[in-house]
Length: 135
Image (cartoon, rainbow, N blue to C red):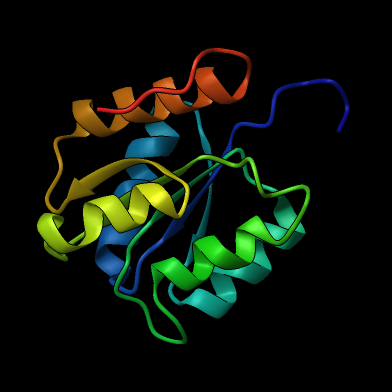
């Protein structure tokens, strides 16, 4: 990198409309955005582009979100990239598992823009030297 902060967020969701909507919101807030619709393309995009944060659905083709988190953990340059889970799956069965897999926040769809943006800000602040948070 050239010394500037990476401001690229990888959005991983199998729903094209949700990916587009999140991309618009994130770009409007100054982020660069990468999009992936399945676990394989998510991993490939993360390895190639090294985003500063991943917004990750759990229900994906070609492996679920837990598989993506496991793959990210195996790459030295990606192991500390914050992951925010944004899913339609139930919180009771998936929250603890997601946090144990390395997620820094967990949201069920739909999520308020302000809540998601605050979680992104906190996660990036933590990754860049702050203290890790849990909601």
